[in-house]
Length: 366
Image 1 (cartoon, helix red, strand yellow):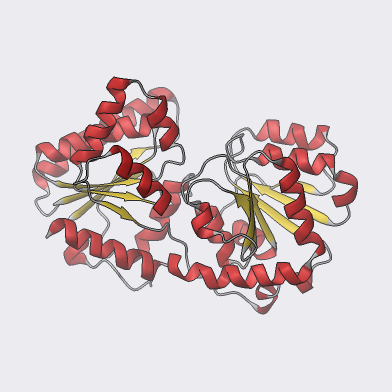
Image 2 (cartoon, rainbow, N blue to C red):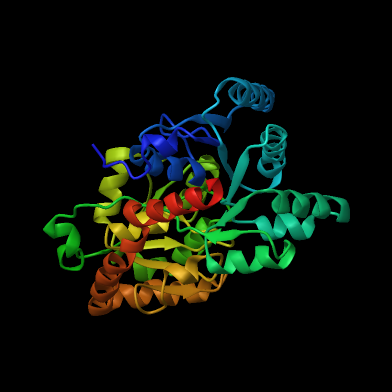
């Protein structure tokens, strides 16, 4: 049993509004709540989103609004709503939750996980930009995932808006000796990609790079891919490019399968085009992986180039090739980066992250 960091006296007063996180739900917000839950003695919670048909999504959200109104009327303990949001439809849906909370004079923390919030804001028309800013200025505290995101939100909100940087969270992992010293245990470079299958995460850039250099990599590298969405397209790309003998699609992975892939991986590759602060990178670091990723979102605050990973510009397939090749041929560098990942991950463990969140709650409530 985890030691409670947010005890009942405080947790009873907080209501979470977020994506469905139970039963192996998919997504970054769901992953964060899965890590949070064991450290809260109680966890008042309303699910605002569940992956389903469009009709069912509307029904789900409508019922969430009803449940919130019911909670506001009959649960007198609740003083603070901790609302987790992405961009686009998620943001507009959560706008209503904030309005309901404020109608009942409750405090609100808006926790922004969106990897593309800048695009969402910049692409909005004048009227929608004004609505976005008005809503951000209305909450009692705004939580963002990195210093770079804080700078962005400081530019568009009023000077009185309280903006806090709170790291994403990952679990402490007890590694066996084999996992701690991965480099000497394998003849091939074991790479891993975990994430949504699509353009944004850069997985097809990774396949294109491997295709261009397949003869060099075929006997020296293997890549496992875990994720959901566009599975048929991914398999088609792997097969049409003739990569099936060293690139493997494992589907959406959770629990023991996910742990096994992370334990075996030496290099975690995430060539994303936009991100917040990816849980997948945090998890990979906790399993002593060197990281190959991009200069987007909060990733440069997590990965120090040439220290615990290699960063490239999004879409630069030649740089992606050089990064993977460097780690494939330089075991000493790979070993150093692996150990540096383990050292760097400690500030993302629950004791640190939820300790700061505890202080944010106290500041808002008192």
